[in-house]
Length: 232
Image (tube, rainbow, N blue to C red):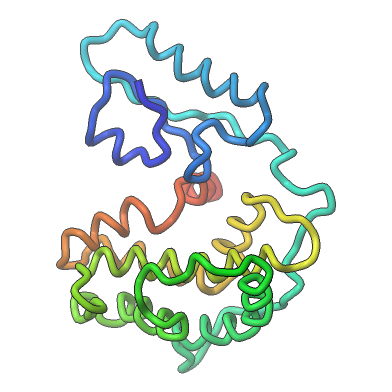
């Protein structure tokens, strides 16, 4: 039996029983230290064992995360971003402007923590928006850094960009939960919106690995589930 954070993987591997959960990566049971909710997830998974079937069984966990997953003071980013760009301003330029506003907070995070998780792609952080934006304007014409396969470069660059934003957010006043920072990045930041657009473009990309990265890992399942729920 498997509790799957990425449902596509479970559908491909086909374990005898699989429960798909829409939580953050690394949190298969949902909210940390919430024993009641974690037991709810475990019971839902164990109930699959009672299903009499010779074929693999796949189910989606339907319950929402508890309200306690948000911080008591209702965290919000103190940096205000402009509305969605228009005219001739490119996606890369909009994200670079956004990053320039967050840079002091990112630098503060690096200083306080003594390091950063940015650096998987090997690209300077300032070059990442342009590299990612090329997946929007010229799919198939991108060049990966060094000897890295293009799909891996896409994944690593996306992780670097998200890490930059996350580390900047955690250095700001107040206490933000992981879910609040995730929602902020994907719904309020131009970087998150750009990554959603890139995910859609990856479906028709000529590189099979890029298709898989775009379809499986660029946007969290928790955000995709919110999209499905809000769709008319």
